[in-house]
Each structure stands twice: as C-alpha cells, then as structure tokens.
Image 1 (cartoon, one colour):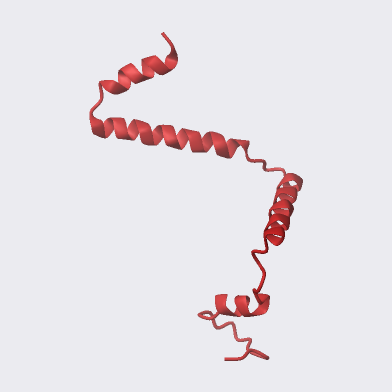
Image 2: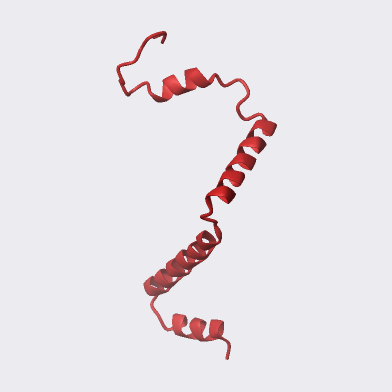
Length: 88
C-alpha cells in the first residue's frame, strides 16, 4: 500500500474537525516546502529583485507616479520634523 493511501485511511477515521486540521497541516507543509526552495543567497536574491523591478518598469506600473509625492503621502501621518519644501 502506498503512503498516500495509508494516510488517507487514517484520515478517514478522524472527525471532520480533525480532518480539517490535517488539511491545514498539509497546506503548512506545502508552504514550508515552497519556502525551502527560495534562495537565501544574497546575490541571487539581488538578481531576482532586479529582474522584478525591470519587469515592473517594462509594464509601466510606475508611469505617472511622482516618487516624492508618493513618499510624502506615505509619511503623511508621521511627523518626522522635516517639512522644508513640502506643500501642505
């Protein structure tokens, strides 16, 4: 008997609530496996980030966005004591 069949047999004996917990744990393990594939090498991470930003520029996602205005809007609720040249 295959391992997946053994797991299924045992799972079928559980209450629906416990079956839901088994399913939740399976999803957790899938995510853990996917995260393990992600690299922690700084150079590879840098290359992936660079590629993602290049793709964003090619798609024009930043078109029409004023970077300074956007930054000021993000900091709007945070008074950092610097307001020279900012229009309110």
